[in-house]
Length: 142
Image (cartoon, rainbow, N blue to C red):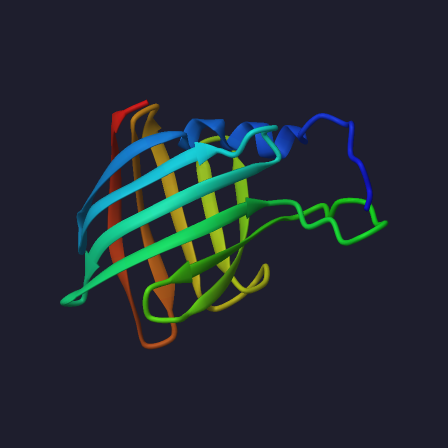
């Protein structure tokens, strides 16, 4: 097993602006909670939302992949597990106030684009083949 004594990447550290409890509005409702796993190498997202007439509960683990004996990937990747049995992979990109979450791989036709209009509000939209939905997150606690 590879013991990593390095600090979390600057890209991971930049995701600290997601930490807290967020209220969802727009085409979805509910809450998401982002919190750091001890060590700061992984961000955990707890999802409890209502979308398209269904309740969705999920856990997402966000961070750089680092297989045995290899260096971390340059991309920030995640896998979400939901109560329907889905496992969904994403790539996170945060550039200034712009957050993009790619479904699967960078350049995918399924993606989220959002903008932090202030430290406690992100306004954006999920786009995917055949549809999409708007989503606004407002932080209710840090």
